[in-house]
Amino acid sequence: MPRSRNKEDAAPSDDYDWRWGEPIEGNVAPCPHVSEEVRKTITQQLQEYHSEKVAKKRRKEELEERIRLGNHGDYSDSGDNDDDKLTISRRESMRSQVE
Image 1 (cartoon, rainbow, N blue to C red):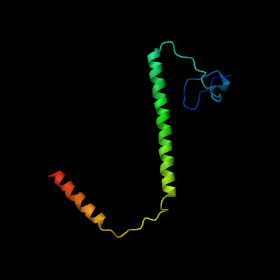
Image 2: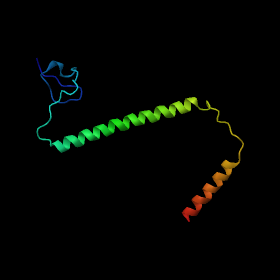
Image 3: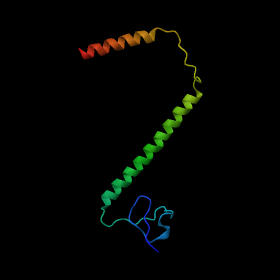
Image 4: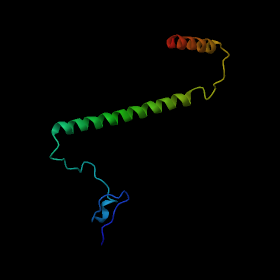
């Protein structure tokens, strides 16, 4: 049987199931050339990545919940002139910073 190449044109393999095999969690042999310090650093970075990912997902869900429970799209103009005053003061501030 001739060797086949995968879709990404990587090195060929004689193993028929190498493309469709399912990885087993924790079934990875450590590289003997990598120090313990590097392993710990990589593990720490992966843990930080996963915790940041969970925190980001939680923030997104909270924001979506606040939007869902909010005023349901009632964004009509209240008629206040505060927005005009704020815009004018912002423009004046920007002009003074440029000068």
